[in-house]
Image (tube, rainbow over all chains, first blue to last red):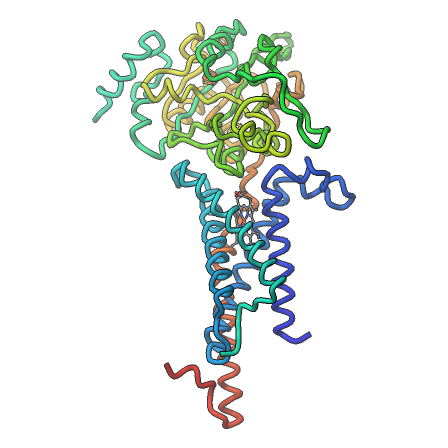
Length: 149
Length: 329
Ligand code: HEM
Ligand code: SF4
Ligand code: SF4
Ligand code: SF4
């Protein structure tokens, strides 16, 4: 497997795991039988999905910063970012930023105001839903994030 | 400096119980300074099990209790459990949405003598409460004085707080709350309830109802560091045992018992709404330990890309083709 393929497969896998473990933060997998499937019981174990969300966030943040930096250094001349690309990047940045702030929130201490935390949760969740929709849109209409000029 | 004033503000609210407070340890004093958490010391040996605290809690907090409308909306799928305490509001031997404090009994032996201990049980008000931090909607929250509360107007009743609480304290009532206005059959299941440390009374400089009404001054509330010292001294003097100081990474409730807590834990009735007294390790610790790696991750990604670029440039120079042109901007 060449390096680019390896990066994009890791990215897809990481994003998939982030989404699963992220939705696992909400009490839905048990209610809707997913956690009844043998081998998927962990989906309803909050400390496990929480830990996985963190673990894959490390992968995710390394990957998106690698991919952006690589683009900036080596592909900027050859490929331009499309409108879908800008929308996607903006959403991914929002997701990462709110995610990181939520991680900071989880340390001991009264760090953010309660209403700010409600917004963080809602924006994080909203960004996930918009990204999934954007991704689907780009796949269906074959919109690329990068294009030859 | 503001000791006198804050003491007076506090005294306005609860003269009768002033003796239960450390001199400078008024809730009002702690309220003003952020990051000072309020801690309660519970001296189990003093409790006579009269349940005055239980009654006081129910009376003072009655206005916060759920008032569900029936019939409840049908929930999908069918197996979603309905939690209805509205016909059992008088139950007082366990935690319920209508009973945030109860007395646990333990028959133990001290020096060959059988004695009955009574233990007031409620939310421990963890220093870093998982019920608050892991609530996906921010409905559970921690106040600056360390008190954790569940906002009943935005709680969806998914019971995650109960699942992640090491003592499984919050209790659900179906048929109330904001889920009724969203998708009642598909998401949410009521509202979670638990002790809120009488935060509204404390904000007014008053004492929590259970402390105010206790005839034996079983509980002492004050700034965390002071009460910890007091608790440690008390434990030393009485050769007592401590619970809550280290549990779940530290809680704002410390019990002092004349017998070891593993003995107490064996002697109490445990189960739904009846929390244990086992040692608890810090539930937030494992994930929080990953956070350092998370903050380094973006830099690692950038460094890896820069390394790759450097390789390309170097190979480019070796092949004498010149580096990639995008460096000249
Ligand atoms: C930079 C990466 C990310 C970090 C650091 C992060 C972190 C977090 C944190 C801390 C929470 C709150 C839950 C809790 O406190 O236990 C959360 C919730 C959630 N995350 Fe992420 N996240 C990241 C990226 C993602 C991604 C890529 C997805 C999915 C595509 C995702 C989906 C979710 C969902 C669905 C929730 C639950 C909803 C909510 O709490 O609002 N997250 N995330
Ligand atoms: S009021 Fe005091 S003595 Fe009576 S049960 Fe409560 S804590 Fe114990
Ligand atoms: S004891 Fe349970 S409900 Fe109370 S603050 Fe700790 S985690 Fe939350
Ligand atoms: S602090 Fe208030 S809410 Fe909590 S048990 Fe005591 S009386 Fe009840």
